[in-house]
Structures are given as structure tokens and as C-alpha cells.
Length: 216
Image (cartoon, rainbow, N blue to C red):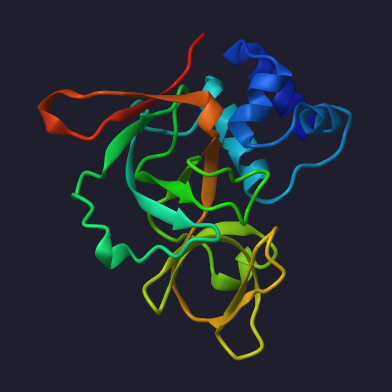
């Protein structure tokens, strides 16, 4: 099956329209329309489409039935986030509920700052794999969550640094890159939940809250 076939199957099986799928993937509706016409999605969006298609079909690989993902802190997008100062509980700040099955052991972060607009809006939720599954070089040219050796966490476009073993962290709305950074961890993006697609509800027991995708 082609990628366009996968997208058509997702729209049918999930009973959603192109705009709703676009919102889940953090792209515009015309982008989804171009994919349906044969344009190929790239990077984490292609991976997210494939994973979503597999989760909706009978022969899908094993995936967690739970749609609860812990939000483990913030990603800097023009703001600096230092994880050691966040004091995040082991179970996360709160939980995100996603309306489709996902692979096991996923975590999420909340975007802080505006340097990665228009896709990564402030307060968007970025769902990533907890463990880095690919070598550093495979992320060049891709957006990802990163934690640097200096102890800071960002959402950035990753490019090759000028020094061995380093990367440059690029922003869409800031011409000055963060250069020659050593990274301790790269979080491959699985899904993007924009602020307009989520709402916050209060949980019992004093937990800060829970984010759920709107169903209407």
C-alpha cells in the first residue's frame, strides 16, 4: 500500500476528516490533501502515519491499549528549560489522553516558547519515545526533543555540528542556532497535540490535572 492508501484507511477506520487528521499530526489540511494526491510525508510525520495505520488495522503489531501518557516536563522553544530544576514526579506532571493506541513506553512534554511556530505552538503537547531508538545521524534535518550535555531540554531541528559528535539546534523563528552541542538524549516525535485539540480537567488526589483531546 502507498502512503496515500494508508491515509485513506486512517480516515475511514478512525472516522475522522482531513482537518482532524491534520490537527493530530501538527500540519495543515492542505498538506494532508497533498499527501492523498501522492506527495510523500517525511520524517516523524511519516512514522506517525504508519504507526497510526498499523494500530487501526487487524494485523497491527502489539501496542498498548492504554492511551494515557505522562507529561514529564517542558521543552524549550525560545525558552530555556533545565530539567534538574523542574522537580517532576516519577509519574509526570499530569497525563495526556490520546484517542488512538500507541506503542508502549511513550512520554510527553509541553512546549514553552515561540521559536518553533507555526507547528510547535506554546502549550502544545509533544509525544515522544522514552528511549532513543536511532543513531544521532538519523535525526539530522529532523525536528526532535533533545537534552543537551549542559542539562537543557529543547524542541529543535537537528543538524550536524562543526565539531565531531556535536549538533546544531535550529529554530524556525530564530536565525541564531545553538551550535556544537553534545546531546545526552533525543526524543523521536510520535505525535503533536496542539493546544486547540486538548482540554484540561482536574484530577482527584491533588494531581495537577489531566489533558484530554476534545471529542466534540
